[in-house]
Image: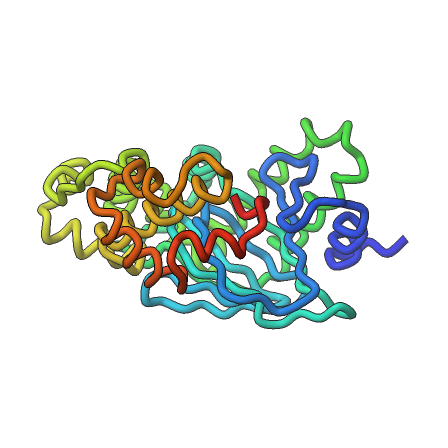
Amino acid sequence: MPNTLVDIVTRYTDAQPAQSPVETPVPGLTFLRSDHRKHPSHLIFKPALCVVAQGAKRSTFGGQRFDYKAGQALVVSVETPALSRVVKASPTEPYLGVIVEFDLTVMREVMESIEAPPRPVSSVQHGVFVTHFQGNMADCVLRLVRLIDTPKAIPMIAPMIMRELCYWLLTGPHGSEVAGLVLANGHAERVIRAIHALREQFSEPVRIEDLAAIAQLSPSAFHRQFKALTSMTPLQYQKQLRLLEARHLMVSGAANAESAAYQVGYESPTQFSREYSRMFGAPPRRDVATLPATAA
């Protein structure tokens, strides 16, 4: 039986009634599939390795655009809103993707156990980059995916493969960038803590001074490093979180446009509608009417 990454993802998604993304029995492992090129969609990327097995994709984080295709992977080290689209797919050769979510605690443990760990870069780098998907890293992902066929082995083997994957990322060509994002006392890690605080309280008014204090930086340095990491300002980041959550509330039927606006922190429904239209290309009611419930 064929056992390549494309073969396994195709076989598994063929057998699933659910639309993409498709969850697997392996914790943190998700498959993506699209038989057609897609319009851009707004979503929140979590820290993960986003592998393209077949086809091609484009993701935009703030002002930074990343194109990646079969044989490449997008590495996301910080939870960030983005605009993403499938740019190469067809019914005969669908877009196939594999998402492996990172556990930054495990990443940190692996780094601490490396005899000569990578030296983190001195300044905060962008939390997203594209890398070639080959060699040991590709072997790890293939073995992780193959575990789907031996579910009893998943609890024992999957954590070991995940640790190995972290090792190859940390000792690979982008090891210094990854190291800067997992060190408990690094600038990037402190900025990430502030991002988590913003994420948890996105409906509240944001004060740069408070976020900077969490990151142990001056407001100007924090603003600069936040933008370096996410390609957007804290206010832009918060706005995207608010609008994505409002869209989720409306699509799921939990709120109408006005109540969703207030729930995510807007004081003016008019301002909400204006900014929603700018981000999604249509006013809230019209946009939500075109979306399936699965978009929630």
